[in-house]
Image 1 (cartoon, one colour):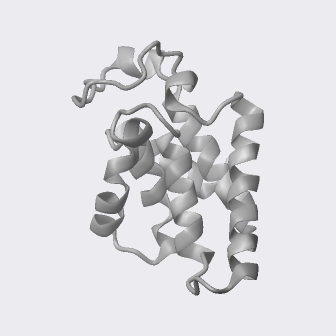
Image 2 (cartoon, rainbow, N blue to C red):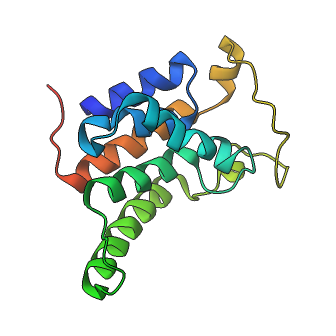
Length: 152
């Protein structure tokens, strides 16, 4: 388990959304402060505001990857291609493990999108939701992608 994956899980268990937990764990990499990190990533929890689309933990890993080494010149096709290769590598690694990138499929939900109100974080919530595992794994994958070593 990496330092970032431990931090991401801990943030999730404090009550932060999946996307906030992962993005916040990488402030040392992104160079963004805590409040900015939390605000930027706040829309992506629950698969984009509980729309149950792309997993928020994975979306946050993509955002952190972009902040760390994304391209800035829209005409630099090589940099864009390289960055998209990295994003695909990260996403496909996640998909190989869990079979999908979609929040609703990860959580085995029947809904196409969900109500906007977040669920209360109780012991039962953490038992039925595997989101802590997804948060931890997304952070581990990003560490590997960035070449950041594991903790002792």
